[in-house]
Length: 231
Image (cartoon, rainbow, N blue to C red; front, side):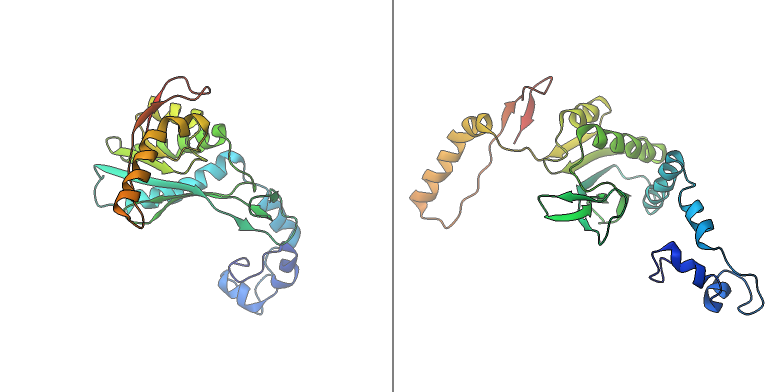
């Protein structure tokens, strides 16, 4: 309640515990009711949940999203991305991110592509997630979704942050489709040069302002255990 009212610091509770409005909102008489919790008590409660309990809390949003469907869908596409959340102090897990030139968190968001409804949000340090971290988040997320919809076809969609070998291998092993961005490199540029040159020539011949084309190759980076389709 204090956070919702704009009081983020537990120190504020030493005064707000006697506030008539807060006492009334918590079911106590505004004048004669017992005072609410003090700052030390609130701070102990903030640190009481274990990692297991925090993960269980994140499942509440996943369950709510699944319940928003009248029946299990045949297929869903989930968009996953991290966003910058700038901090204004020295909060725990806040790190300096050179790309954004800010001290920040980098929470991961997952949304239903068809409805734009939130599926899961994970607060995390202000750095690019590793492949192992992403794999762990996906493992818990997909397991929870399939406890509701065991037969729904799932597709994950994200930028190159998420196109990690660990993530792609896990998706393939657990029957999860994926569309991930892939960072360019000299090998990819060489393999795609014929298609790119064809587009440049056709654009020059037609004097088009812009021209878009598509190509498909099989590619395997050294860190991959097999080749994969790249479009």
